[in-house]
Length: 343
Image 1 (cartoon, one colour):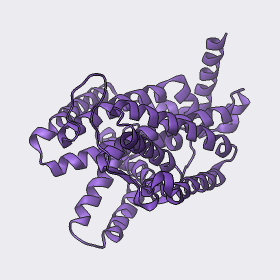
Image 2 (cartoon, rainbow, N blue to C red):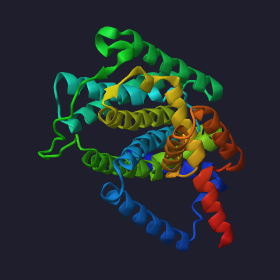
Image 3 (cartoon, rainbow, N blue to C red):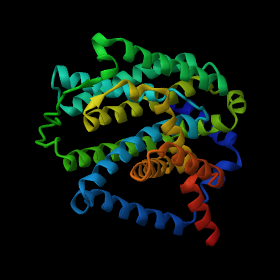
Image 4 (tube, rainbow, N blue to C red):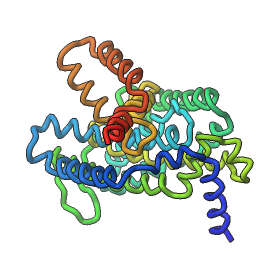
C-alpha cells in the first residue's frame, strides 16, 4: 500500500513538472556517450593527479572536491527544491567541529568521525528545517540566515567548548578505520581518501536526485501549489530535502577539518554560506555536476587572483559579476547548450 502510494505521488509529480522535464531528458545518444567519455577521462585525471602534479595542485584539488560536495548538497535545496538558503554553512561548520572535537579528545578513526559529523549535521538540519520550511521565498532565506548566524554566535562565544575565535586545532588523524593502514598525514593519500568519499557521496546524491523523491522535489520547485493539489505534503518533502542536504554538507565539513587542521567559526559564518550559492550559480544549478564545475572555477580563480594582487576580492567580484550576467545557465549549462546548438 505504501509503495503504491509513493508510485502514485511520483506519477502526479511527473505531471506537475510539465514540459521542462521533457526538455531536460532530451539529450541525444551522442551527447550521452560523449559525456561518459569525458567523465571517464576526468576520473582518470583525478586519480592520477598526485603522481603528475606538484603538492600545490593537490591541495587545490582537495579543496575543490570538498567544496564541490558542499555546493552539490546546497543544490539539492536550491536547484531541485527551489529554496534559497543563506545558512548552509551551519551544517558544514558543525560537521567540521564534530570531527575536530572527536579527533582531539578521543582520537577516533576518521571514518567514525565522519559518520558522527553526518549524524550531528542531520539532526541540526532537521531542527532548523522544521521551522524554516514553514516559510517561502525571501522569508525562508532570511530565517535560514538567522539560524546560521545563531550557530555561528554559539561557536564563537562558547569558548569553553569551541575555543572561541581560535577554533579547535592541534589534532591529528591517526587512522582511517576498516583496518586500512593509510598515512593520512600525506597530502596525496588524504586527497585520494577525499576523492573516494566524495565520489561515493556524489553517487548517492545523484541516485537521490534521480529517484521519485527527486522528481517530486523538482515538481515542487516548479509549481508547489499544483503539487499540493495532487495530495502531496509539500512541507514534508521540503523538510526531507533540507535535512538530506544538511547531512551531505556535514560530511563535507568533516572532510574539511583534517584538511585545514583546524575547525574555526569562520566555517560557520554567513559569508561561508554565500560560497556554495556562488558555486552553484556559476556552474549551473540545473545540472547535477554544475556545483562541482562552479567549485573548481571559484577556487582556481581565487588562487590565481590572490597570487597577483591584494585586491583579490574586488577583481574576483568583477569576474563573478560578468559570469553571472553573460552565463545565465552557468558555465556547464552554457557549454552544453553551445554543444547542442552545434549539433
